[in-house]
Length: 188
Image 1 (cartoon, rainbow, N blue to C red):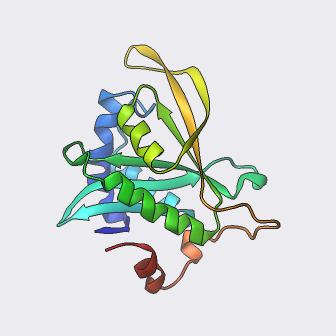
Image 2: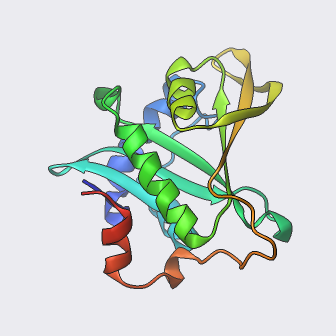
């Protein structure tokens, strides 16, 4: 089941994310955030953007969310996106399902562009993003130092919908009402 994340999910989300911080260069965070910090992140992000979890029975196996691409007003129609899958649940199509749902909500909100930064090498993440239709737009060479070495980050973009002249500002998550919207946009 894919659903909107809540503060109550912070413990499981933190448990998925922590190994990426401490044991890999996939994220450039070097220390795992506390559960309380993750609660605050979920609260802050979900005021404006979607944060979704993939839940099987009572266990969260992955999550995806969008954040601000850039603070300048002219960027308001673009978002950065991230997806993380539990170590024991990879290669089951969960990331693709989460992204498909996320992009449906982002389109409904009025966003036009999604961007993802991937630390290289990361063939699994590149494969997922290629499958979702992302295209490379540039590489930041040796931009981050973690795990004893310098890392490149490739930036990818996905056009969520064709550009519109005089677009309306995107709708914030906390301004979208009615459970029927989520029933239509989230597959279950």
